[in-house]
Length: 169
Length: 102
Image 1 (cartoon, rainbow over the protein chains, first blue to last red):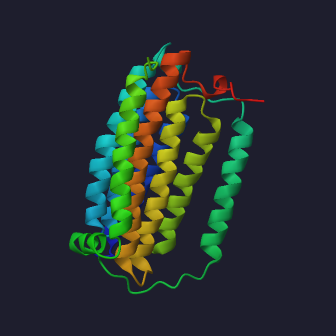
Image 2: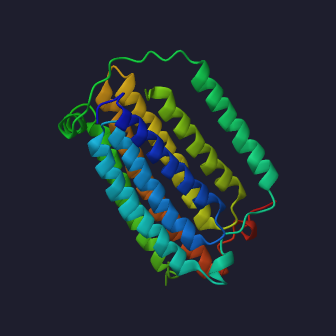
């Protein structure tokens, strides 16, 4: 999508509205199942924002990994651990005022920093999946391998934790 | 004209919502969801920087992909931990997970 056009502006506001509304649903809904499904909507909205940034590969990865895998994992986690009534499964704690104050002050600081910084906006360039792949296999190869190892370790750790360790005999 | 700061403001709002949820939620799985929201807001920022103002545009998206991989690992381990605690203590409320409290 060409940056600066009317369609681009409309798409940006529509997608960010969807994303933020769904995120508010995740945080404020009292039913954990509703939160989990709205989390998936949030991830899809962020994928749409990546599309408006002309990052097609990121959008595809976001839709696959977050909206596909992570959201499904969260839904399974909700299903496995629910006990009482689902309609009151996601209550807030007693820190509402403190939490709101902390979140608002952090957001205020970030917004102030964004508005006060004179950003040097360059012409910008579009990154293709090929560029990303080449970078992964050349100068980002060591962290790429480290992340592969991390994923393997996390997978094994998750399986061990889920199965529950038996006492060594 | 949508510029860099529009995307950064959306990222900031998403981060604030995630932080609020992280501080005020009672259910461990809801806390994990809030952390995912915060990680997503950081990814929006990185991709926006890579699109608008980076000298090395691909690096921003590479960082985002690393964050996505680490977030996937984090949520898998986090949910496994939540389930392990649920099995042992029969609760996923973070208010009741206080047995290391002084």
